[in-house]
Every structure is written in structure tokens, then in C-alpha cells.
Image (cartoon, rainbow, N blue to C red; front, side, top):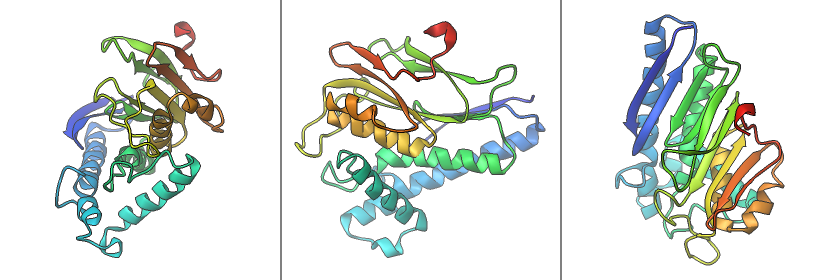
Length: 253
């Protein structure tokens, strides 16, 4: 198999793409170009740090939803569904302004990976700031091995997963502090240090991880009710908990 790894800074973070397909190098380069071009388009539309992005203008009332790009409506419709699925804990208005970032990053990565598959890449890993989707496997292995960062020791891992065709999303307080708000109290959520969700779709897994973090300790039981998803949690007081079927590497249990 050929192998191409590219890392670029986009959407305010380091994004790494690993393509492990038996394709000519120019074709792998073309696929990589398409991924990063797409992520830059997403950033232009959805960045809450850019005053002239569509989502910023929509939030200020300077732009009507009907005048936005079709993907804006797609994202906001899914966020409304996620608000219902999480009993209101995933709330794009929790901070007082429109901010669907807790879904957009995962959605954008998932869309990029789906495009890669359609364009002929069956073996890839796209990682955006620790939220990632993997498909197929790297050369010489049956699955991808993914380390979940230890929430206190930046150079260590809490778990090592072995997965294929799965999304992994982590929400935590260890990098940005308590930045996720409980939408019912308006206060930052502090009871959980790290929440990781593994599932079939990265946008959904990302939103579920954010919602569980916002819930605090009750989020642990809520995660256990999610069909088709596995999870791992580290509490602020140091407890490490995981679902029984979390795909932990056999030599790392």
C-alpha cells in the first residue's frame, strides 16, 4: 500500500490526514487536497471567530437562514435533533450566541471521510484536534490503533483503542478549562474531566460527548443508554470508567 500523511492548521487546530491506499501518489495528493479544501470552506462558513462568516452573521441577525448556504440549514436541523436526543444538554445557544461548533467539527470530518470513500479511498484516518474518523486499516494491520489522551498527563494515554469504520470524539476540560456550559444552570460543567464516545458518525459522537460533559455525573448513566455507542469517562476526582464493549486494544486492557 502507498502511504501519505499530511498535517495542516485549519479550523483553528492541527488536522492530520493519513491515507493508506494502494493508489498512485499523485492521486493520494489530490484526495488530500480535496479534504483540506473542504475543511477551509467549512471554516469560512461556520467559524464563530470570523465576524463575516455565515454563522456569525446569522447569529447577529445580519443574515437570514434562507440566505445561508444549504449546509447551514443541514447543520442547524441536525443540532435541533441532537438537542432533543440529549434532553436539551446539547444546546447551540447555551452560551447566549449561536454556536454549533460542538457538532460542526465532527460533521465536517465525517463528510470529508465519506467523500474520500466515494473517491476511492477505503483506508484512512482523519483527526481534527483529537476527534477522528477511521476507515479500513493502515498497511499491515486489521484495525487502526487510537490513543485517548490522559486528561492530566499530556504525553500519556488513558486508553488505546483498536477500531475500524468508527468515529472517536472526546470532550474535556483539560485543555481549555471548563468551557462547556450546563444550559440549564448557565454554569461551566466541572464534574467530568474527559468524555470519549465511539460510534458510527463523528458529528453525533462529538455532540454526545459534549452533552455528557455538560450533564456532569448524570452523564455517565446517560451514556450507557446510547445504542450503538461505547464510551469512556474520567471524572474530576480521578475515577476512570468505560463501557464493557469499548474496543480497547487486547494488549492494552
